[in-house]
Length: 250
Image 1: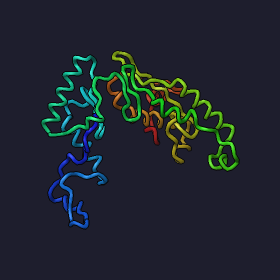
Image 2 (image 1 turned 60 degrees about the vertical axis):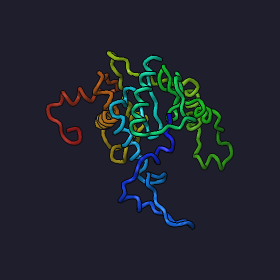
Image 3 (image 1 turned 180 degrees about the horizontal axis):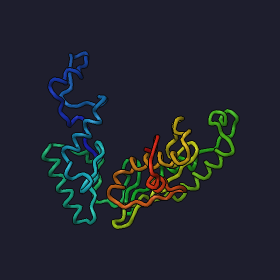
Image 4 (image 1 turned 90 degrees about the vertical axis):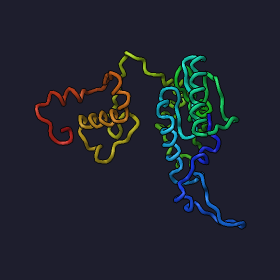
């Protein structure tokens, strides 16, 4: 579901209206509602949605700015969730754009991904662009992209991976999560590059740094589920067996 000119449904404080003043041939005007293009408009709208639907979010619905989705486990429950949502929308006089709303679907695109009963999948249209991306052939194209044989091998691996991409499925209650920790010379977890200072850390400290970074990013999962750590070295065991910790590890 999509809001109908969502930003314009948020009233502006009277003392702030004059800040949106603009001059035309017919006179000077200002906005009474939040207009598009304001620096904090996106954050303000999201905060408003969280305030109005705080008891329903992450349960019956999910809201991201002006995109809204009602999620249910059965058709009967879906009707109940929609009714509850519509009552809330009517209460605060929020309007939806009927041309951008779809009801009773089992799968669809949301925020650039395909969401269905299996989980969250990569959008095939986005993958198609990468699969069909041509390889730099001319010298100017190679120099522009700094293309080497290693780049070509990595590019081919990415395309092979995207042929059958993984599906992000919901957490299975009662089963532990497994955290695979990868630490290289210049990056950790194959996703974050070390800073110049972190590159000079000893191997164990780089592993600890990666573990701290991963736990901060995945905190919401680790607090609710048992997590197993898989790594070449066991930083937790080393830290617990150390009689006294000094330096960065301390």
